[in-house]
Image 1 (tube, helix red, strand yellow):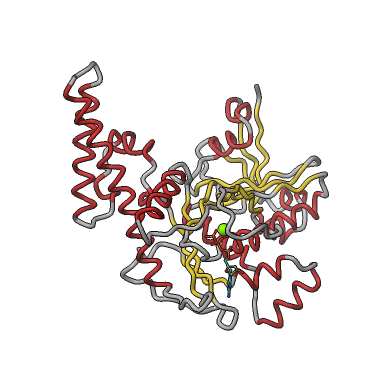
Image 2 (cartoon, helix red, strand yellow):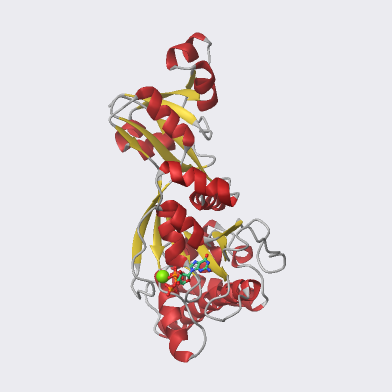
Length: 351
Ligand SMILES: Nc1nc2c(ncn2[C@@H]2O[C@H](COP(=O)(O)OP(=O)(O)OP(=O)(O)O)[C@@H](O)[C@H]2O)c(=O)[nH]1
Ligand SMILES: [Mg+2]
């Protein structure tokens, strides 16, 4: 999964990313894009690793893009922000990092900042639609063999423009398979799943915010003090637990962050095990065993015979694979089986 970190300048994007990835923080205010891989913590995978003791334990990852901060203060910064927003059109998930701590005497206005960001995403999409309309209208002056397709696309964009201007979500106007296909390559920002992170002050790390009326209630929202969590992420395991206990924290920010990303994307993990590696595979909920096999290897999909499946909880309760089989809890599933979160799967295939 590819996530882009967006926020106003100095909202704590780089600090948060360092905290959730466990990396050292580089220089702040760097104006370059940086890709940072966040490993997905999963206690179930660690348990499997301890059971099978393979050579490697391979976690799922979230590929995060750290972007320079946005500013909409004047035309100059606005142009820069527009360029940055254009660069996240290929990302699958937007992580909006909102400053909820006072900084250098500037009071935090988190809800205002969130609302502004949402508006700017919408304006960026409107800009894109208007550019497409202009271009298509020019192309249609001199009709070519693509004219029919261009006309359909123009109609769609005129409809999308109206939708945005009526302050309705774009997805309400993109319904048919053809519309979805035309809209997809453009990477509309307001069609992407979103996670909102309020970056809180040290003295009130769990501060919660009422986002009703600003964002859809289905969007995951978390509060994290990136600065504290960064410090925690740099400690060794023993000091980590102690420090967190002192602060009354039950889990590191990375857990909350990853859970929100999975929830926004509708993702689950299944596992494969063996002598070489134990591994977590992120997939969309609702994926069939056949498509899950394809994630592991195209050959396994091509030669799919069946998926020998244990539920993680059964395996944990019964202790090992043999006991699972003896208890009749090893399921032989076919191509159309819908893979469940926590399934431990051995694919049988023949090519
Ligand atoms: N009090 C407080 N300060 C924070 C927190 N997170 C980050 N900061 C501070 O805010 C400043 C900016 O943090 P960065 O992580 O560089 O912010 P950024 O969003 O990456 O900044 P740009 O990339 O320049 O937009 C730094 O001085 C951080 O130490 C936080 O949770 N609480
Ligand atoms: Mg930064």
